[in-house]
Image 1 (cartoon, helix red, strand yellow):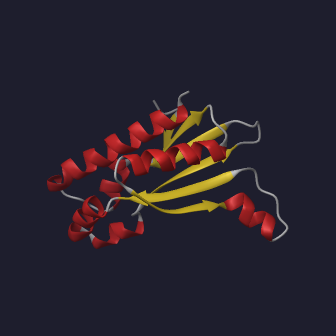
Image 2 (image 1 turned 90 degrees about the vertical axis):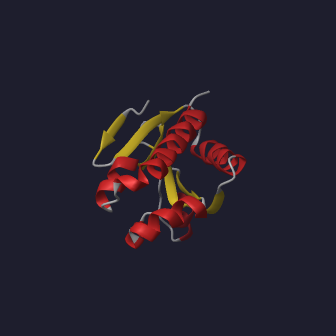
Length: 136
């Protein structure tokens, strides 16, 4: 269950470090047959230019079959695909997982009801992903 939802963004507390959380997410994504396209370590990038940033990483992933079906209806959803999650540490040392809400994606890109199954698949995948990676 998310800790909060704001403007189409779901955020939930994790018991893992940022690195462990992203490792767990990547393993989960691949175990479900999806593709991990990128892992971006914003803190390392900040450090490379002499700046400081608390641990912050993005995982970019998806499944071409699901994404393509949505882009065939509204190609501009490619701006938000592949999917991504953000793991970040706040000023208190707590780690959070943040990702886009599927209903927000549907509304933003005016996806019709014919894509309800694909959107439900995304919602189920993302909530399962979040639950599996943030608990334990």
